[in-house]
Image (tube, rainbow, N blue to C red):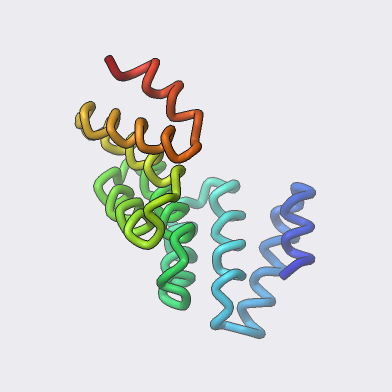
Length: 142
């Protein structure tokens, strides 16, 4: 798993995938291997594969909020903003102080035409320390 992570960080995504596949073969209930493979698939543009792997990671570790956020990102990249919002909601339910989930949820709300809801989420994300949310407020909110 660590070798796969090293390969990922060096940009050797094919090598990372091979290592994560081996970890999953040897230890099929190791959520982190699915999550890391999902991250690799995301970089490679395989959003459906990303969702599948994050879903498996969530099945194994249902209380890990970042898995929901990352799966939501993949859903949003497939224009499934409602599905993304459901995942961000779950991440926020588990960890109400996870600023990034509010920011991404705001973007998805905005993409669905809910400007007020998006702006509220950007504001909350900023309050919690995701200062990039203030750029979204300046750009999109009155």
